[in-house]
Length: 92
Image (tube, rainbow, N blue to C red; front, side, top):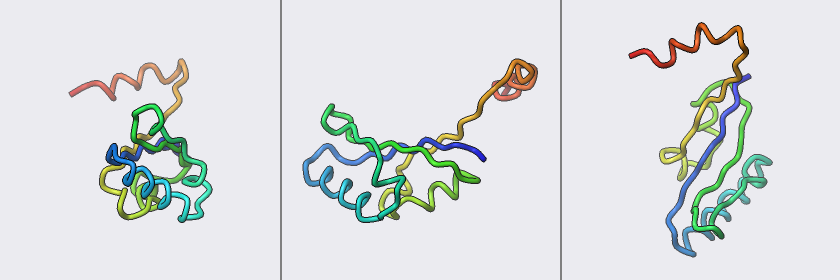
């Protein structure tokens, strides 16, 4: 199953931080209640990782107010045998 790190940003204001944290905690989702936050270091974002079937499935797990701005990246692991096929990721 694919892995997707999720990055969700919010405004750099105390009210926005408080609201984002509150919304994440109120979901009760173990993914979001255990999110890592960068606010105390000036990075007003939350991060967590999901193991789900697709990017769209990952997006649907997010609270609606964060779905559009979330950055969702599909991670892949490569082996030496995969080197011939990785070229396809970089060709126009």
